[in-house]
Length: 311
Image (cartoon, rainbow, N blue to C red; front, side, top):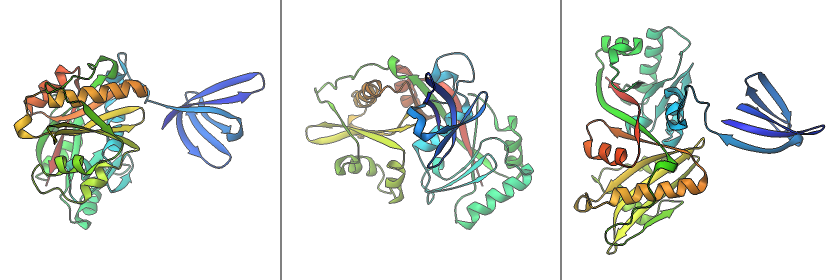
């Protein structure tokens, strides 16, 4: 994590801001701009996690790098099993969702590209899972723009499911929008049976591993809206590294276009402001025009895009 650690010194206190790279019983090590600072834990006055460092000018939700935001999003939808090859992350969760069952190439794998892809393929073959890679870039990027993309196309991989990563400043989200019936959104720290039933019954094929993904973040919050005794919409908020991610947004078909989704997301925005979390993301399939309009109407804008290549 990235944090600011305040410690006592002879004539007061001082702060170390950077990545926490090691913690043991006696010390905390923070990589700052000037190098690694080793702090005696007995001298620590306070510590607070902060978001990743901005890589360009602008609002924090836009200035974060694509790589850093992708890392944060992993924590919001954590795989059951993971492994690393240099900067590449292998993810597996019994095949449930591409986000939890694909290679995320973050930086250099540490071996030649072709050999790295071979290693990835073997890892997924051993688990009986589809060979799947997640490639990301600026909105509108093409697979041919990336050396890994060209390597995968040469191996007959097929691209699919372009997904837009949207971000917003929580202060810009509207206050909770009351549903036309007057119903209010309920926020809970855990998945209630009613929430689970409403989300899991979308197509009747939700596997048991889904519950682990929905509860695997460092912290999460779930929202539901009940009308006339029926849960008509649900959403989940994953909290990690001082960011929040909206996922598992589902509205019962007969209640779509009745402001259920807007009520859910706006209520989550209220909670984020209370918690002091400044930035939020969502992931929406490029082809899902209604969801794109929903989030853009709530103040979200496109940060970057990703797609899958599978074989």
